[in-house]
Image (cartoon, one colour):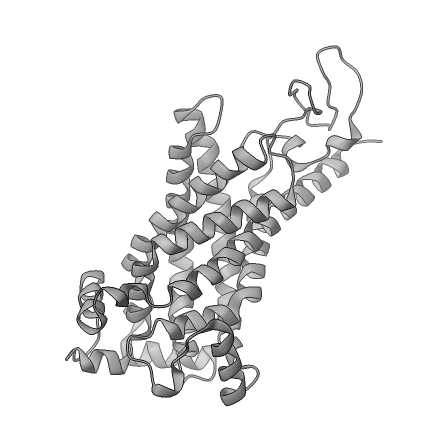
Length: 338
């Protein structure tokens, strides 16, 4: 993403590291152009990582109750007391029958994972996007480069988030025996070993690599349409982020259903499928879902997934872009003598 400076109707011009923006005739500073795209191209890795960590934490904190409902709605053989027809109805029923705080169980482990995971995610994405755009498209924005950068960033993100996802989803399930994240970690470690925390890793990558490719390509494409000057524009970041997340979520729902099954090892579903022991492997998960629910099984919880991802990605991008703008501007101002 090239950072540049320029007023409306004028040719884009370079901005020096000391914050002085000049046109070819030399001269005046435009105080109104202090958006993040008008700041130096050398936004530091620490800025990207800090902004990414804040975005990840905020996204998961705000949307966690909906995430809890999504996990339950993807259950292949839910308890009769945990069958829901809508997100609102599910939340109301969970709060009424299981307590006000029940939809938030497991939030702490998710926040602990989301911070470092999203820091590496956005830091890697920005670095690789800049590098690959220089290779594929010397003077602009390459969608291929954005997709590859998003895929590479996903490898780092999922390595951190997969264990947190396992603990979180087991705590979210109806009638879960786990009351605390630490207790869940100890039980899984003792009964299933370290491998349990990465049992769904290949499925997670198989889901998230296409998800993030679609997500980043769509976001960057929409930004070109609604925010062609690539200024700091919260409305455009929210709109582009939300639509990108919704499209990517709908396209990858079947993989998310399989990931949930591998993470939760849903006992009733495995019993019905005559599976003894633990279910492993994406191919086995796909077969089990089809065996129990047919083709509709791959789209269980799709509405909840879209409703979860759409505001999640909108929040994530808007928070990320804000902190990137704020931190870069702050660093510039502290270096600039007045």
